Length: 257
Image: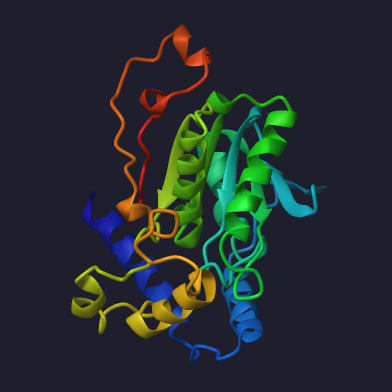
């Protein structure tokens, strides 16, 4: 990275930090959701992006397509927000530009949120979205599944569900700072507490309690995929990729942090 690029990166990061700390965190769930939508709307989608609402099996979503992108390949996207906030609106710019960069259509999912709908509602919605794409005739090896924060958690949990059922898996995953450990066992929650503008232990505890409640333990792999066994051997891509998938068909994820 050149000195100019590094300077631009720091300028953008500092601008985001100022935005995130410009107002105190709202207290109520509705207020928090509105605030995240407000933050996401600071960066509107590009004029050349085509968006289309879709409703299937009681679930709402949004297609997006950038010029010259392949309609037959799809990024299935789950937004972040600690399973309690976030929406199609808050992450619209993120997912539409990700689709442009990947050269494919995107389908963002408005999955149910806690605390009104705790675990496993989100898993059910993710699987519903996956089944919907199958009914559209889109093969698993033409699908990327991804998300940020809680959406990254949900992405990994969907793959675990598919693995357990012996089903074919997506081509790859796109994970952006995935929230993989709801037990909060990481040391940096303490060591970085004064540095991070929004993520603090008390806040995460509140989100995790709203989502998982006391139905299952926080270290359960269905809640915290950090503790799931997702290790899979690599193998060259061949025509055998068309057969029903096993764990060995899974291609590792890209994890921007």
